[in-house]
Length: 155
Image (cartoon, rainbow, N blue to C red; front, side):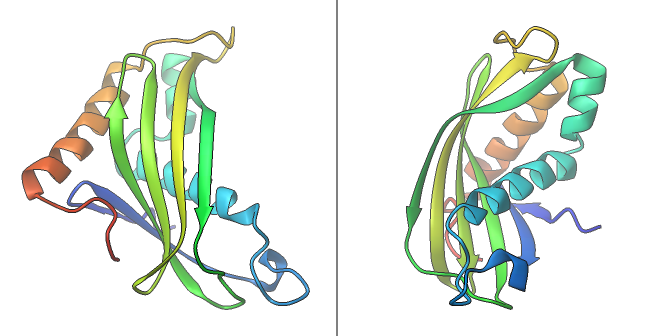
């Protein structure tokens, strides 16, 4: 399975809209954009070499969404090919801030701003990011800064 690519500090993950994703008018149901963003985040971690399942298994830590804001700009429709672009905006001891933009060609369809909390999988209490996860996220962020990329602009 394709995990997407990381370039210029942005992970890009492609997906296609199927009939099951749409409402009676052939437009993507609004909650599905959050599902697409989740897939993009999961594949970004995988592409960085730190899949979420491994983070849980090896470090006993996991991410949960603490805050999500979504701005809908244009609808996606049946059979559209989309790109979920994920950009790390900030990294703290037990928190990661992301911006994700869902694109169809050069048109932004939805912008998702997220705060992820890292928690201990057993207790549900806040916990520091595991070193390898932090390092991967820092490398991705540094790649964006060094490359002079404009965060999540275009596909």
